[in-house]
Length: 296
Image 1 (cartoon, one colour):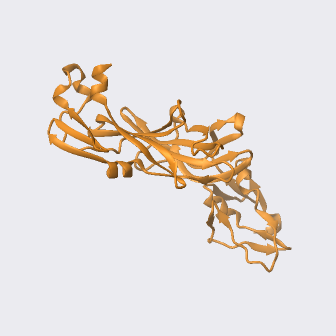
Image 2: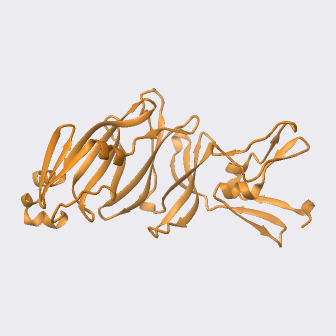
């Protein structure tokens, strides 16, 4: 291949990611390359005429793009299925998806590798969300930690179906793209929620010394089809929903207490507060689905 004839052809979808391919540098200085905050060690930059050049192919693939050599045009092609999937235009906040691929476990199409753009500054995150028009990412721009500045809240989805919701959440400082830690709701439940199976039809849920009893025998026949027939164990893996409350901008997680496949006896509600640099559980309660439905 004649290198003088080689054309680097970069699609517009990746210009936002790769606009720093060449930059001024001191030839005597050791050069490190970081992608998304992590050192890139697959190859080192090369100094030519006091400029540092990075390997386009390796870097593009690290960002989730596909590269190939076009023999006819003598060009390196970098392609990505970038799509705008969520935005807050008035705040100049845009979320793009780099690629769409099938998840091998769920067989669902997923957007993998997301680009967050805030005031024309961009950052690539190794996130994924389901590629469904009815379940696009939810963006909120609110002050969650009480510092009088807005944080960017991004709620993504790993899947959704009848009786199932599986959200993930990210809270980002829009000025520097730093992500805040959020205590895992399943770890909170494991530590704070105690459940006793009293009989095949009855369970006791205890949170902070407050107990709630669930008795399946109290369900009228017309409602029984939506609830488990017996209680032998409680699961929490099929319903995890995040939201920002409308009243006071509180970060909330709702986790379903599942006694049979996609059949629930209630929800664990977790309200978070910001403490010691991360979001931790502030209030936990049990929402008794059976009782609430019968009283409605």
